[in-house]
Image (cartoon, rainbow, N blue to C red; front, side):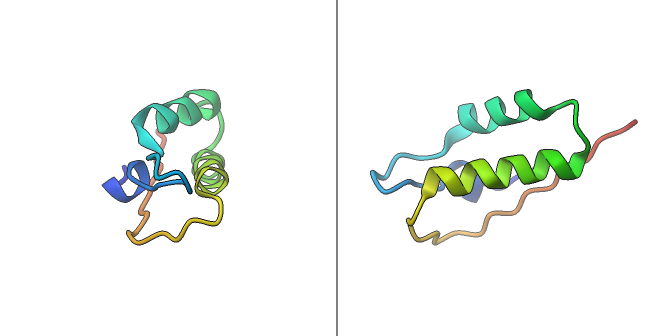
Length: 66
């Protein structure tokens, strides 16, 4: 679960993180535990936005059933 703050986060060129980037990170890390998936998304998002100021909240919840 995520809010638009995640997908609409912008880099220095004002490009949005987007659903495709989020889905790519989830696809690459889906086999790991929920916490590792969350950390991978957060790390990728931070790399993407760089020094850009974030003006929206970035809620993200990852849950898995085992």
